[in-house]
Image (tube, rainbow, N blue to C red; front, side):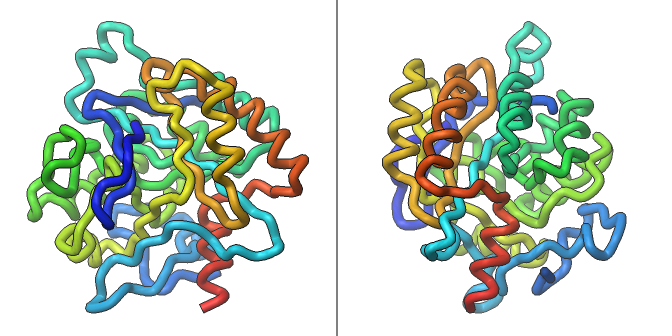
Length: 281
């Protein structure tokens, strides 16, 4: 879940024992090798050009233009070692949230861990095959890519690329037809070494500029206020979709969506914001 700002390279955090989500243009470089490619159109969504020295590019928000677009993103962050908790009945999904997004017709991007897709393959497939949504990569295990990342276990440098590719493989096995070449670092924590390690995968790293505060929140109105006060044209909002650790997110969304629409905002997926940002370069 989300925590305060961490250095210049990491913005927020998800608690180590945390959770996830529910049922349901042209790229500069190829998507990851484990990323399935059923068609040319599906396998070539917009990405950003590599950064200096070929580092993985980082996207935070879209253009601040009069076209008032905003992307709601939801992290499905079940960690690799949370199987016993799921077996004991803890729910790392939130089907009601996904149902509400469908009812309200809100295009959204779900950043999913591979472990979550293994736990909830039917839901992963449902989300991944619904054109309202797009699935992006949140690593396989939800372990941190830097040290000292809010208590998360740490992935070694030589396993970082495998974390990304293993997640794409889990999506494919769950029946997700074309996961996007976008990656969100667990906890939002990254550094130059992490960006270098992922450069060969071809992903664009996606951060955010609006923290919803839904992690462990019990006041849906407070979450909604924080989002409504923070959103600007081109914003990326980070939220969560787990019943156990973000229990009021669905209720907050039912306030956020109509209020932003009243203000003239239009909901889009991350891919649309990246495409718009890339087109202005």
